[in-house]
Length: 81
Image (cartoon, rainbow, N blue to C red):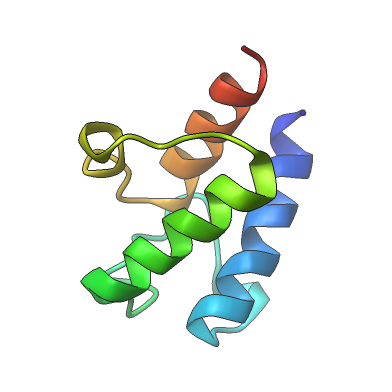
């Protein structure tokens, strides 16, 4: 999966999970600060990512994912394995 495809899919998930405008989502967007996600939102978002992209995100990795771009990088890296 390429980065642009992963970003587009991730944006769709974020719009559905967090009820934000797609236009407001950039790779620099922070889930908590910019998109208004709380800790439960982030857990649900990561679960949706695991299901959509068929990857497993261990807790120690999940704690490091703070921005949309970091999530995209992680997905691209893991989906290539």
